[in-house]
Image (cartoon, rainbow, N blue to C red; front, side, top):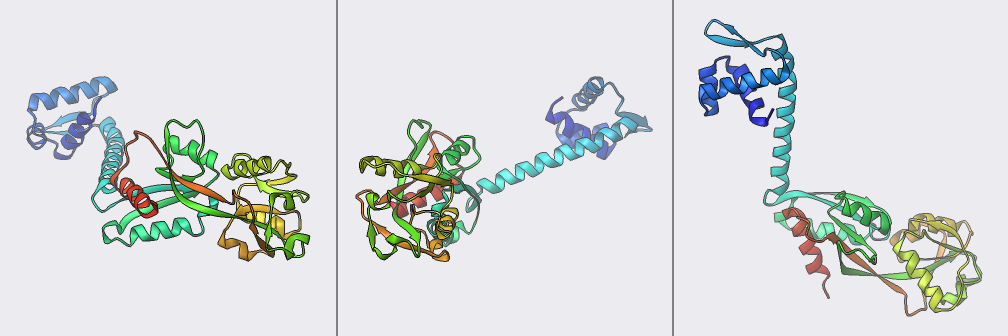
Length: 294
């Protein structure tokens, strides 16, 4: 059974006349008759019965009509949705990003894009996560674009540098280091470290810092997001190296400059190579690259 047969069936059920239905469908009456007969044979039930010069649905035809109507309605809704998504000046973008860029960078970049009247009807769905999860879901088409750390051995994914984040150290307000303005890796080494989970791109960056300083971090707690880490620092459970984030001011912590050559990390725009991008996604991608290029 094919889609045309479902349209033929619905049209005949509405008009109750083979000749009129065939004319509306733009096919010959024998073609319509053959198609309906093939449906009845496949279903093993009579769908129409004669009533004078017309035909009407049988009991089985009325039952089948309910499902055909639902199926065709859903297909038409899907078609309309696709047309809306690819229409000029409208569409939808599925965007995902690391938590650390969700407070300022992402809202600013989306707002700037939507300020263009040509983009006013484009909608967004936004998601947060760590880099490993973001890339996993990007490749499985859950998202269109991702802001994340760069991952090695991801040949399917293009990473474009778009934004540099500063790193800072946060300590409890009454911590021995709180009197300092700047601290080094070796300064924080003696204290328990509240760090990112191993799946995070930031964790690799922090581990590399300690390795280059030839010291071993005392990682006691691991979290995926900055807010949880800041909360643990405020609870006097250790110190943390995090991306400089406006939300830090909501916690009773002291922010210190990080005196190291590696006190910044790059944020990348990631997308799957050779995958079709709908017009709205392509426009947003181009806007990001143009706005953030050096």
